[in-house]
Length: 304
Image 1 (cartoon, helix red, strand yellow):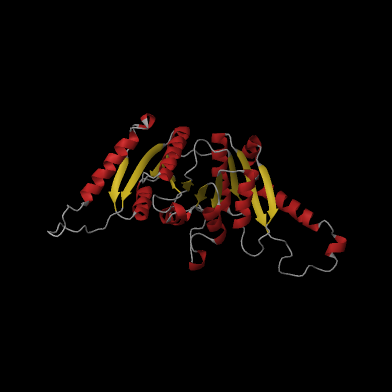
Image 2: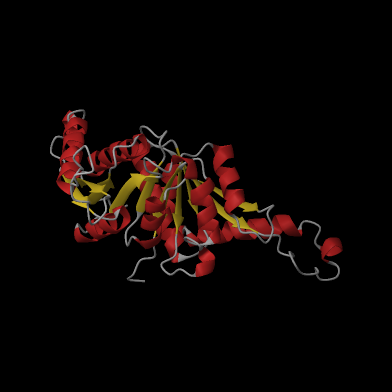
């Protein structure tokens, strides 16, 4: 698998972003990749000028930047092994600055916490959601409780080239961390919403089992170019029928993650959105919002 070469880690000094930065540093060490941090000071474009009615001086943008610079120096002092890492401190909208910085740095992985300092109750913060939606490179959202190597990785497969790309990233992580690798394909009852042909129940009593085995064969065929790596990792293939018929597979995938104890889910996301998608498609949205694990979101390869 191709190694990660350049990583940008967004940091707001919340406990979640600190966990994300430490994971970014660990990935950089494993891949001998460059690592750069960015902290965005989200302040109004215009800061009120001092006024005689105010009995205290108002902070300026320079004050906010100075505070952030001090916070980075204190934080960096706790990371002696990463003394070479630089942190860019910029003013503006966090999501816009982070996305622009990632593009400018030609980063091939963007890492940030799943939520910021002020939106832990939301599960996934607006900045993290915007980065997954709009970034042109893979985005790793790290949960606040994550620490150390990943133990279990699930790659969500839907037979698209983007999901195969997500599988490649999942293989890299599993090989790097010695993690268990699960390949998951969800499907609906083949007769959902329609009347089965007459005689199916009588002539093919094991039709559902045959249908599942057929899907498993299709998954193996789809993954054939990666068979050597998958065999080395003893990857497990799971084709599961969703119980949430007609409502996407997000809930079923989240439950699978919980049952297997996976701490990373790799999935492909779209590169075009519409209003109905809300963020990045109903299934991916439910996974990102509901999964009790870190998320590696992969966009389609523009060359394909």
